[in-house]
Length: 432
Image (cartoon, rainbow, N blue to C red):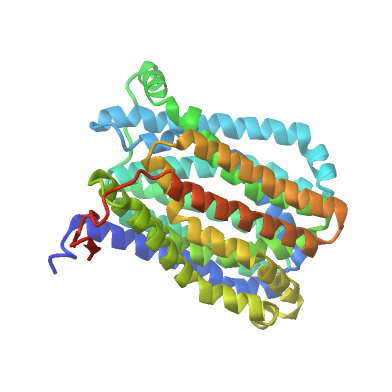
């Protein structure tokens, strides 16, 4: 009872519960969606999401992360409005680019069916930027139940509207509009809850306060933007290359496969990473043996993920055909090919935070960019040399396995040597 009376624990459980529900809803909807829509329709959706995400992740200039930092609420409000203003500007920029480049984008990706949906990109960008700003403001106010509710709203509306559109025979339009509506409704949920809950951010008194806030926290757009862009460019770049070298059906198979493989494991991995980061920081501060703890965590994450990927390796095609319909057996083949990459990626996820602890962010950014180049290079080489999507994905998967194994050795190797048996929280060198 003392444990659950802790405010921190209650807040964590609130977010975990909301995240769990928000993750379960789209997975539960997947068997219905795959029977209502064709793979090529999912391919157009994947292209739309990829283009929208490239703008959305930088919509706020990453200023939303700084909303939590000021001690006083009146100092945090200008940061919030800087984040909102940046979102409006990036949304307008995306609108101009969609007007100017609509035709060239569709021709380059060989996807004429994408054209009418590019006009919705600015709405997604603006909705995402507003949502992120409201999300961090709500977190500052400790309104974690409100945050969890907004995530459930997004997942439920996206899945529910998608299924309804499928039964209505709307095709690609239903998928795209459900995606747009889900993001917009999540922002509306947080906005209305904040307004009626009496926790809406106050307007800054003067424009100069926003300028001062933008200058004070300028490292967020200058540094953090590049990390998030590198991560996003990998997902979007893969979608663009599959559409360019193959077809929308192949992209549809890949996008749903990647989603199905990564959504549940990302939830587990996120929880594991948060716990590992806290413990690793404690061990480092106590000059304990962080290398031993990291290796132990690596072994544990591999043990968690190994059974899942063995099942995919052995029975992936049959499993996908059973769950999502026989046309999706091809997606099961993709899952079998990609499973070694996703397995090593999951195992490395907690250790990816180690460079932040020992102030090696610049090297990490360089390696992230190198990893991005290897991903896109492998897929492009496979498409150009073989013209076969399975061989291209195999080259991509094997190349990333080698790269991530190297990242694991690097992350452990940069750790300072600590006293053996000095790990905090245990006796006689043993962790409890």
